[in-house]
Length: 399
Ligand code: CTP
Image 1 (cartoon, rainbow, N blue to C red):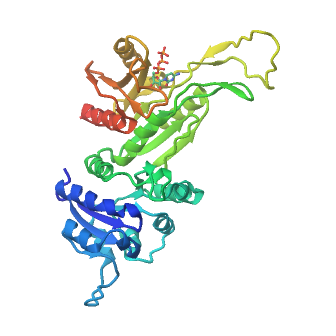
Image 2 (cartoon, rainbow, N blue to C red; image 1 turned 135 degrees about the vertical axis):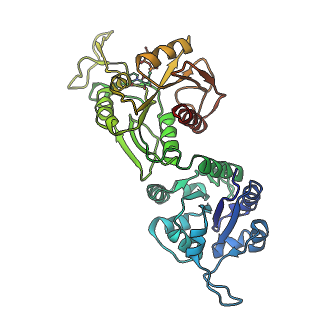
């Protein structure tokens, strides 16, 4: 899968550095060529000899070779790689690359690298949670760097929490996915809706739903990884995503979502509508907080616009549309009806009958139904994998 791919691994000084030995092994066994750059601090955690033996290349540490005085050309190293991975990425090196410091061979190579860059942070939980770390991670994501998030678990400090470097197998999977997906959507501009809508009742209350936005954000991330530009229209959510090719539009109501979609869809190649839009909204929004008085209270509701159906009516021949259907019964039948009614190419059907599917979970279980009436079922998977499956399917559908 990685045959002939050239990967530069930058190793910084954290205890997780020892795991890079396993990562090099995995990447080499899949056919990749690997060159490693170590910061001076990292050789306290993994020896240059281990790294050079496993990678079958010299371990690069200094700007010049102390034996023969020869200069190590960091520009050449950066140009050699099809991908640069910095793992583990310490808080210190993160702060340097977020701000353009280049006081060692690794950071200088990073600054001169032309290839895509991924990082796998590793640090103690309080450092990982520090606002400067958050800001620095956001900054490098905006520079187009893919962050493989740290995982929860046992930390070298003895504490338990988020900060462990992603496992070598996970990093290898991300690298493989990167090479498979790379540029498969280059030149496309994709509109994605995500999250819930909030329909105000009065200044402090609203009607909403349990949508977390995770599915829409996973789809946006996957499209960005494939080289697409993304316009992400999202309701209130905790999800975050930063990328130079991302335009994020935050909305609250269905009407605001529709206005944003109508504005942007004409310039897009297609759209994926993953938002859980409130079908109704209160007819009147009270100016002041409604006081409790009677034992019963009634709110009169009016129908919201169907964002997807409205956009479906305007879909041009060169554009494609993907919708979602969340069902509790007769899922395929209802999904087929929505596919037709909303003029879709593909509908992603999930049912709350399946455990681990739907709102709030990190996983989803889907069935895809396309405009040829073909159904394909998928196993319960993480929303990241589900997003990948949907886009893989969509791209073959369009060919
Ligand atoms: N959708 C939308 N605007 C709405 C309602 C739904 O854009 N007002 C989109 C959703 O984002 C999803 C698809 O339409 O892609 C189907 O949504 P769903 O809630 O499953 O179905 P509805 O059409 O609302 O029908 P019902 O609630 O009766 O099942």
